Image (cartoon, rainbow, N blue to C red; front, side, top):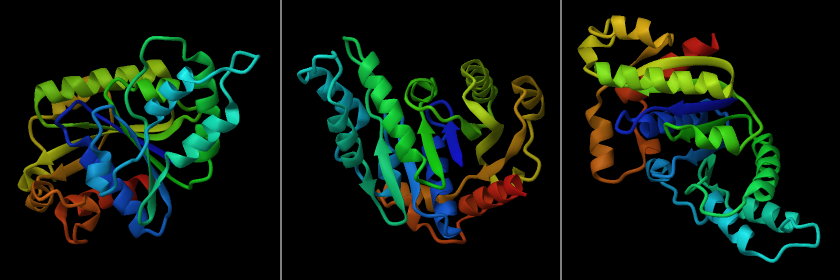
Length: 251
C-alpha cells in the first residue's frame, strides 16, 4: 500500500507521515519504506535517521559520468547507487529524493531511476511518502499510483484553500489509484469531535474529512529536544488519533 502525505508548509505533514510509519510498525507491518520527497526534508529528523545519499544527488552524479555508446549512463551503476541510498532503521527504511533537477537533460537518467524505484518499492508491503506541496516527485519519479493520499491542513480558511489547491493538482496529475482524504491537524483536543469553522471549507475543498489530530504537548516536547517521534509513548493523543483514522479507513 502506498500512502502519500501532502500539505502546505507548517501544517505538520512530516509529523503525520512519521506517526503513520509508527502506526504501521506497531501493527507489525515491517519493514516500511519511508520516502522523503520534500527537498526541504525533515522526515529523517523526525524518524531519527539521516540519509547518506539522495536520489537527487545520484541523478547529478549520473549526468556527469561518461556515457556508453548508446548515450545512456550505466544502468548497473545507477541501480547500485539507489540500493546504497536506502538507509536502514528499526522497522523501517528511509529513502530521500533530495533536491530537484539542475540544468541539463535528465530524461534517460530519470527513466532508469523510475524503473529501479518501482522495483525497490514493490519489495515493501507499505510505502509512506512525505511529499512536497507540488507533488513533483509523484509525477516524475515513480510508476506506482498512490493508494491513499492524505492532504493535511489546519483549521484556517487559508489552510483549507491550500488543501483545495493541492487536491486539484493531485487530480490533474492522476496519481491516486485509491482514496484521497483530508486531515485537520493541530486541533484543540476539546474540538476534535466536532471541529468548528471548517464545515464550509470542507464543502469547498471537495475532499472527504478523514478526521482531526489534536495538538499534543508531547510532540512539541519531543521536537524541541530533537527526539525521534517514533519514540512517542503509545498513549500519545496525536498518535491515538492517527491510529483511529487509519483503522477506520481499513475497515
